[in-house]
Length: 144
Image 1: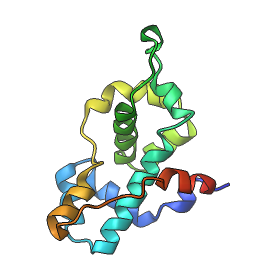
Image 2 (image 1 turned 60 degrees about the vertical axis):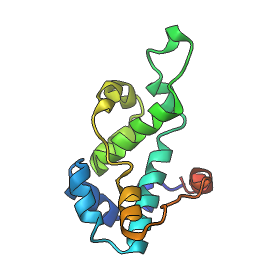
Image 3 (image 1 turned 90 degrees about the vertical axis):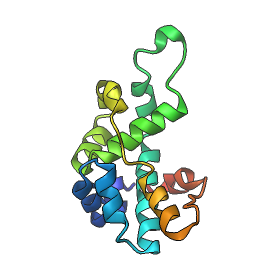
Image 4 (image 1 turned 135 degrees about the vertical axis):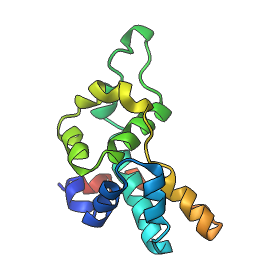
């Protein structure tokens, strides 16, 4: 069984590190990318985010919601996962190895993440939507 460390490129993590969780900085970096490289970055970002949107992470994200009888919404979970990816490789793998950390950082998720930047840049440059296969997370499940 592979981990995201075996699948995601060092180039991806370097771009995330260089952007320092700043959407404008990431946009400047991605403006220099080819169409293919931009698609690859987007796919890796979305795939990493997907890995954190299911068990066991979603259970920890819902901690504190028991009284309301509901778990965390899909949109909130996506924001949490995108925020974690935006923090960089070391942070991502700290959460990957310690899913309970999601509950600790849930309140900080209101901070900006860079989840939508690649698709915005792609549209601006190529006037086409940067679409992701809806089954991406399911297709890669066998890899992790």
